[in-house]
Length: 282
Image 1 (cartoon, rainbow, N blue to C red):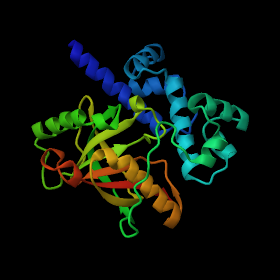
Image 2: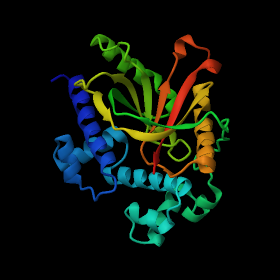
Image 3: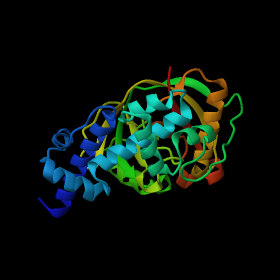
Image 4: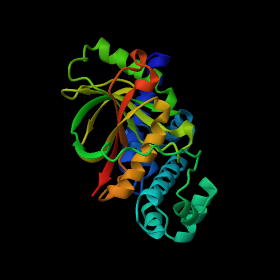
């Protein structure tokens, strides 16, 4: 196996473990269990995981749980103790210490202020008629994972599009979308997780960093934003405000979706149309 082939194989296998981790974040995950998902020995898996992600396994799990806790503090009515227990902490005090160490603010102050943990984002308040509820899915997707600033996803989409084109999978069914796992107001830019994706009429076997994904049916609150992609965080903030005023239920931990309704290379930034979708838990 060539060096590049080995690297691609390791990326794919660690990606498989990360997907398993993300799907079982509420469980008591063990290193052997995650290593098995990647078909590595526990000893080698931990070293390879750190080399490819920049974090140890326990550190990675802890960060994801705390970032999810921050989102729940802001978007739900759960008590701080309930959120602490859901995050794997046995007491309010230990959760508070971990939260303060990660974000330099206590959970109670963060909930009271509903502030940004990275940089302030002024919400774009959508018109009353702009937002609506709808069910999306199930969808068959082909996707490629990007980790880093959301503004840098263009190269990931280019690699995915080249693969889809070479396999002659583009057609009238094709819709480009992004799956956004993290909130840029909570997660540092270098750790933001995003899947570039295209819809397909049926499941297709991927290879390397290109993998298939079945997106289940869920309820979403949606709106279409017109303007540069850089305004999307503010559009999301506006949609959250709309939901808090008019919605029924809570914003889910499921990733947000972005459907790109026109082509950035052929459209002026101010005319770009993006349908943003936040999953709702009834």
